[in-house]
Amino acid sequence: YRFRHIVMEYFPDMLRAAGTDPPEVLFYILSHGYTFYEIVGSTGELREINVGDNDATGLRDWAENAEKKSGSGFHLNLFASIALEDLEGFI
Image (cartoon, rainbow, N blue to C red):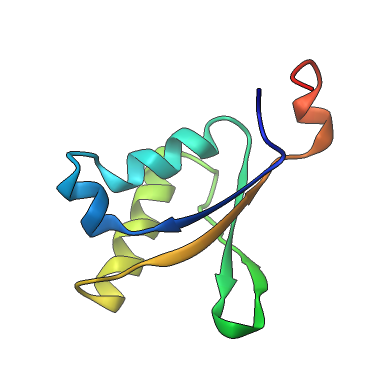
């Protein structure tokens, strides 16, 4: 079963501590047809995350740049959404 929406906290340090490559988690979701949005601060505004051609390299570049800008302890609230027509056969 695929969910139409996913809300998650992306916390690279914790993913690494668990032995997981952080951008790989995001790419797994992206590769299943989802689009990512950043949940902005206290407003809850959704800002689409542009990763170029939605490929692994673009997503990895985005994730690494976002983490470098913010430093240690970086985390981000993410919303992922998939179009209803892409869920056909799953619901």
